[in-house]
Image 1 (tube, rainbow, N blue to C red):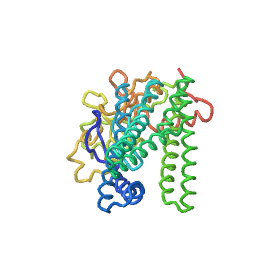
Image 2 (cartoon, rainbow, N blue to C red):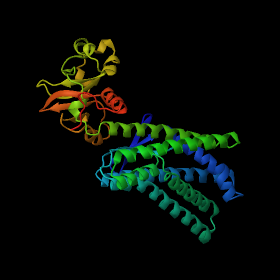
Image 3 (cartoon, helix red, strand yellow):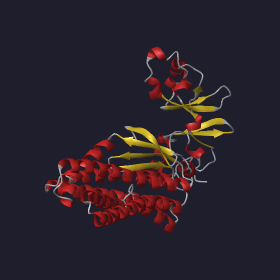
Image 4 (cartoon, one colour):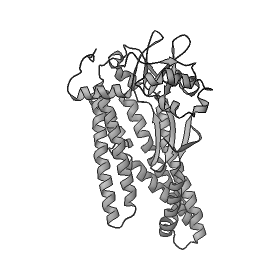
Length: 380
């Protein structure tokens, strides 16, 4: 996620924090200190409420981290590659590859909400027990508030709306029941769009009736709607490429250039003659060595272009997606790991045979929408 910084590691994967997290912590502390604690434990000083609210906000952020950690840990146990965990204002995001089975998808999806519900129950019970044993009102109130917040988080995430965990659960169950992954993806994404619009509408009505917190619900609803729409497009793509081999979808021949050229020579001799915005590179033996973005080349100041080799500003082949011409395109898309994406380098016997770009995939989707595969796109 953009605008985030790495702050450490959790269960072996990078942990990142979005700039909105400190803002969220301040808002949580403010609400806890000004509203929740005075209602649960009245009669205390402003200083007591301030300290307790900060502790409560930090504990809640920690529980959000536990929620995402559960997803990451379960994914790794299921052999699903995990790129990173990012905390941000709407909770957290765990970026990972696509599960290979419905049971793995279900296990990853339910792990987060179950963790939140467990933490919520423990915190709520601890708060009640602490008050009965010691009479410490403020610490008990913080724990009770933390418990309710986690229980709400767990239940809210189970709404059947992709990208919420409940949408992932719905997708996994439909996949298991029907055996049709693409259909399950489309249904869960459509559900996410519907739920997102409803949440945004409820939030807006609440705001118009004098509840400022309704704007937060509007933001959440809009986020869910946008992400669900993107996931539905991805599901449609996987349906469109079902049975299509990489060789039938790739652009070939494709303009490629030597990776030892200077940036200026590469621009003059290769980039200006290409119709693609991302170009493959070849090493001295003619093997693919990486890709370079034309916009990355354009951003290099003219004075530096003669002193840089193009391979120094390129993405190496180890970080690029690759496939063989006879591979099924949907299987290639399924196994794309976190951090890899378009274009896909098509390699045959160590030589570059072509590339599959986002434009190629868009063309396949348009032909699929017309109800035909078109020349050169016969399945099998």
